[in-house]
Image (cartoon, rainbow, N blue to C red; front, side, top):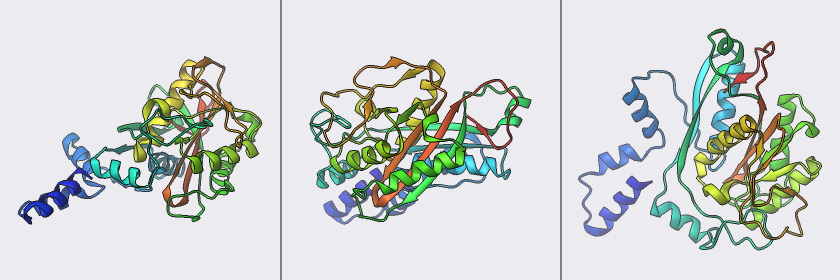
Length: 302
């Protein structure tokens, strides 16, 4: 987006488009991935998923299905997004941003705060990983997606989109809802998103601990799902619930068991991570703590 920004400013300033081929070539979503592949001498096939704020989780889920299907033994997957003035102004014009603290699921929330980052995971067939003695951090065991097509930016207030994504992730993992120990929510601290996701979670789960880590990290858009998947991995490794900071008062319209303000220890085996984007794009993944046991070839180690 920074290249698009420079292109626009140059055009407005003096109409000079002499550098336009460079700007245009670097503007496309796949260019940073191609640059990374060239820098590290990687010639493997590559796919880019540009699916709004669900992109990182979609990328992990797609890589999981590629490995589970047997098409690939191992895949690098993740998400990235760079902050620019164009992005900031875009969200501000939608009146989605706040100049205050980000308060996901709080009664007094006033909007989202943008963040910036990237995260990459190595997914590998579990049996193959164990054969070569690779350290397995956790297993991805389920992935679900949905599209509710309700509005360009607003989720369906019924929560049907998030609910279907979570249900499909559970079905993919062959688990009932009561086997989920913690949910890392999308939780952007915007009114419509928090309400729809909160409704979906409360309908599917019985007071499972929930937190959004965007109060600490900001909303890194396409990178968010990948970053939050790694937060889930850390929670499983160190057996704790990540906190939902800046939380002061429960929203009367959402009945959730919020991990308010402070992390706390808890025995975790299976967690679910949500990412929901503009246009009604919804994705959920189920991640399970790895135990030394006979592996099932369909599971994917991270």
